[in-house]
Picture (cartoon, protein in one colour):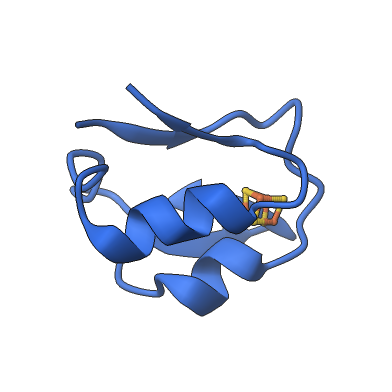
Length: 61
Ligand code: SF4
């Protein structure tokens, strides 16, 4: 499953990088998926990060 961040919804809370630092990071104050980590949507910590994103910006497709 693919994971991505909708830049129009993210407001840079940092929650995703805190919960799953091997997948997410912050660039210019906004959450983003690390290069090469786009196919990690099935990992438990990624699902947890998506559930806790306060703006529902994390997409699992
Ligand atoms: S948890 Fe959501 S709002 Fe916060 S930085 Fe990550 S994608 Fe953006």
